[in-house]
Every structure is written in structure tokens, then in C-alpha cells.
Length: 222
Image 1 (spheres, one colour):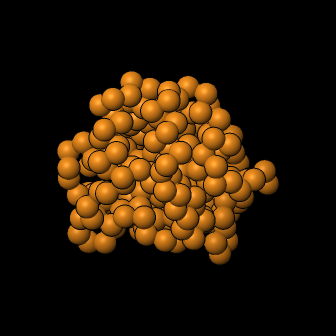
Image 2 (spheres, helix red, strand yellow):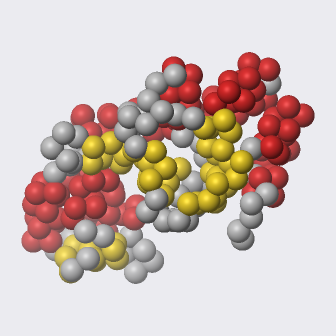
């Protein structure tokens, strides 16, 4: 259910928030963005601490040759680790954020954010908990890209993102972006899986025909 009331949208946060944090969030601006809106661009100054009330934001980076890799996604109750880092270090954004759905979020100005971090232990714990969660995601991503076999990562992605009919609606380009690989590499891996009977590739869809075989790939030792 759509709501612009942070107390209703984030009841767990409301329950553990102290008076200062509640006052801060009560007075924070509420922003709304339609799908495919730019939340921030690489090089932008960081002016607000955002808490997602509803919707999804994709945070990604782009290499010099135009390749993209998804760093993480933000959903209900999340705050961006890059935003936190930029606010603490007074740095510009090193990546980009785009809404994947319509988004409603709380926007806390940087000055009020810094004051609350200093004065409220409850707010400080909330900020660092969100920071820690997404930092762990980033470390896991770096390890996977640097050391993980693309065949294993691809098999896991197919399994994790299939629907109840074992179908994944996606393109080779989108999958390559999600996994931080080249489209040609993903296409080659998918064709090899298809030749072995593990999947069937259709336009814009991939049907998983042998899920057990894909699980076996995921369980292979590096």
C-alpha cells in the first residue's frame, strides 16, 4: 500500500527511534520519482541522505568503454552506502543511481544528517547498520567478479531470478550488466548451456529446462 508516512512505512524504525530521530524524520522532505529517473549521477555533489519508503533504486557504475555493473539495489527501508560515504567524506558520487520503479523516499539535508549522527546514538546506529549491510554486498560482489567463475555466477543468477514456471525474462545485455561481464561472454555461456540441454533461449526469455544441472554448476568448487 502506498504511503508517504514514514511511521507507517517503517514501523520497526519508528519503534527503535529516539525523540531526536523521530523529529528529524518527521520534518524530512518526502520526494517522489517515476521509474527510470536519475537519482544521482557520477560526479554529483551529495546533498541529502535518502531513506526509501517505497520502490526500487539500482546503483551501478560505468566503465570508460561503456560497460555497466550493478553494485546493489535499494528497496523498502534502505539507505545508500555510497550516499553515506559521500556525506561523511564530503565527496561527490562515484557511481549512478536510477529508479527501477516509482520511488517515494525521505530526504534529509546533509547538515541535519551530520548533526543527527553526532547527537543521536539511535540515528547513528541506524545509519551504520545500513552502511554495513550494503558494504558487505559490495565486498561480495568484488570477490565474485574477481575470483568467481562466470559459469557458476550465471547459473546462480538464472536460478535466483526465475519465476514459478522456471522462466527468466531478461536480455543477454541486462544479465551481463548484472554480473559485471561482457555481453559476448554471457551469450557464449548461455549458448553452451543451451547446447547441453540446461536451458532454452527465446527472444527476451530464458527457460530453465534442467534446474538440477544448474544447481550442480553452482555447487562446483573453484
